[in-house]
View 1 (cartoon, protein in one colour):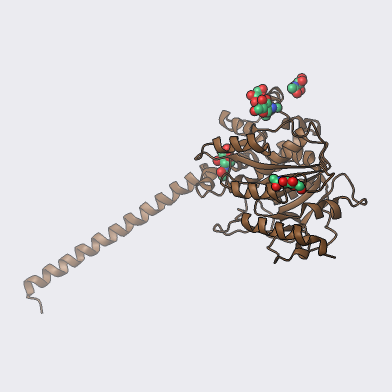
View 2: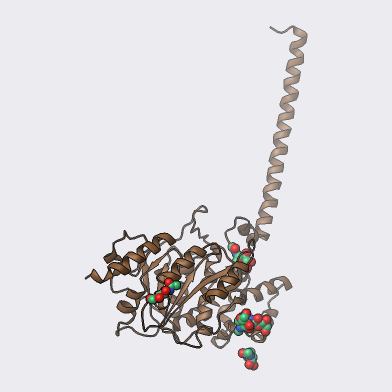
Length: 395
Ligand SMILES: *[C@@H]1O[C@H](CO)[C@@H](O)[C@H](O)[C@H]1NC(C)=O
Ligand SMILES: *[C@@H]1O[C@H](CO)[C@@H](O)[C@H](O)[C@H]1NC(C)=O
Ligand SMILES: *[C@@H]1O[C@H](CO)[C@@H](O)[C@H](O)[C@H]1NC(C)=O
Ligand SMILES: *[C@@H]1O[C@H](CO)[C@@H](O)[C@H](O)[C@H]1NC(C)=O
Ligand SMILES: *[C@@H]1O[C@H](CO)[C@@H](O)[C@H](O)[C@H]1NC(C)=O
């Protein structure tokens, strides 16, 4: 088809092109190999940063991991006496001394300055946060029977208001001292002024200076534990719950906590979840990377939607938390601490008391349960009104 002259040209072109393609392929493979090598090296050097990039973990986890990689044996080396339960008291001199001590210990191991700084931070990582609002005298004038610790977010003023008017009303059971506290971290984008004035008005908010995010929920719970241990250790029982819950405080007190057979120490109850496995899919809300939690199953835990414990447990969880690597799933983290402390979960007397889902409303069902989930502020007010009107008719 082609004229002879052109045919030669085309064949020549094809050959050249082919040659070009071959060398391009070689170059590509070369680039690929070199690239992979560099990437691998980068990964090895920056493992913590890689996981941080995927927002798997907070800097806290990074420190924790670094700590575990570099000083795997440190915890076992530490004697029990240096447990330093005094960490959770605000004693900077103590903290400093201890860090120096641990630094000295590791001085022998060939450690870079940077790494030993990481360790130092890790060692006190769970409790470096300061109370911005402490309500430190809430418990000095009275000895509560029940303390309600409610995890809330900044923009949930309506939730808090509804809870104040319903199950969080401190006079809900006449003759029984109840104290209500909402727990908050800080929001970097919003001014704290509204919270401060709400706090001045109701005196029922405690706040620490950690950033208030889902992954920091464990910090919120630990703040509550710290508050109990520091300012209210004479209370009898504590309930930790969420702002989207219905809680039947009266039933909780009268039917569960007044039960004389209850042990007053090391008591922990709620909706017990058994046999749950870590989610290994990165897209899951409860994603848990293997390096953070290597086991295939979680210990039995009480759902964070509402659990109740005797006050001494708060102190035990708090001191144990200095040695249990941080997990952002607060209820599982608490269970890990309890496990290590040898505290068993007590099943509630009835399975249908603590509910992690929404229970269809009827006055008599709600009269004889303790928690129901996902109740909006307006629904809560509505349910409460009906319940108060009708509860006398229930068996
Ligand atoms: C802080 O700890 C030091 C050393 O353990 C102790 O001497 C001091 O009294 C403590 N201070 C407070 C305010 O607890
Ligand atoms: C802890 O102590 C430091 C300095 O001693 C002080 O600035 C801080 O306000 C204290 N925080 C609490 C919660 O007591
Ligand atoms: C608690 O907060 C008040 C008011 O902000 C402050 O004056 C007091 O020092 C704080 N107490 C402690 C122990 O941090
Ligand atoms: C709390 O309950 C008492 C009586 O049970 C009631 O008088 C008071 O108004 C309630 N408080 C709020 C904030 O609803
Ligand atoms: C948790 O709080 C700390 C302290 O404020 C902050 O540095 C960190 O970014 C927070 N983590 C997440 C995942 O938000």
